Image (cartoon, rainbow, N blue to C red; front, side, top):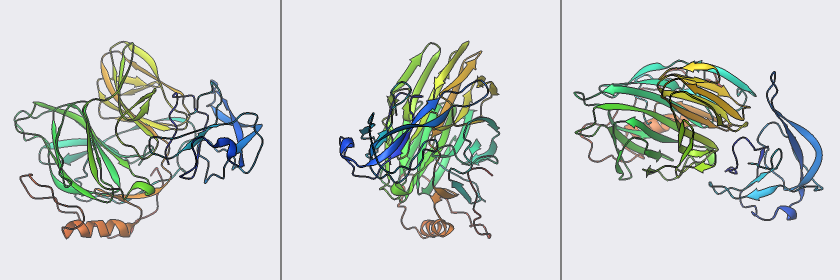
Length: 425
């Protein structure tokens, strides 16, 4: 399913519809939709959706997204919703209210614990402020990263399932990032740099150097292998983030491919420059392919800036502090920390006394339960075990040519079976 882009913070709700429904055929459809009214947040509460007496035509939908709309059954139409085609190719129906807008890489842990993540049950219905502390993890021969997701407190933010922050590291006399060939399945990797360069190779033949504020996006789909290394020679400093996005079930077996986008859209305001890495931010759309409603934006704040970022009330969000010191919704964040924010906001206050860099990550809460172990995302422990066996046997994931060194060996699976867990620990 896709989602209908619109002005951020103005979407009432989105109703998902089965694939193949007509884009311009709203009046011909024959099931009712109960309209909702957005009630803005007050000082002591968060915003909410309230049912009205209005009913309009629609068709029989699989389920309703957003904030608890009642299931829908059949008809009259004082106002009709608009049906539009989305970037992912699936139409959505959007009900207008308020202002009329509706709207990497690698886990090198030698003993990775399997996690069952996803589902909406543990997603806060309103704003929260949870400061997530990182875990220090080695990445290759000489680089350490700060792992923010999965975290002791939280496993996912929308479709974002893995977040590492590294640097700023002086690697002038070091090999820098050296990650041998390893497999992925069921996810997308996002390479994002503030300083340095990373050379990407993969088993579908890609060879690409990714530089600061260029998007390196690898969709593993049914299976791919890749390596990451600092080129020789390489810049003195290395600083960036590595992220994964979980693929929804309908798209997790797509053909593997790699995208490189050297130029990305930006949104500017006094003291703020936002680069749209993935998804849509304030009307600007990244060229990177997405398979679920989400956003990733790099936010550069000039010293002395105090402003608010537009956000979607039905997305959950987190902010990763990349550099400098900033205040996000009243909470001080330092480089390498991440603030989980929950849902229910239409704007996010930010403030920086001196220059600071943030990454805004968000998306609709990921509905499906996923099992994540090592560099795989699946749905069952058995599926993960089969992927490990395939990698060990040299099957399915292909070969990475040109890397000087052996490929990574898969760790042993834990002796205990997977235990069902939700989005939080």
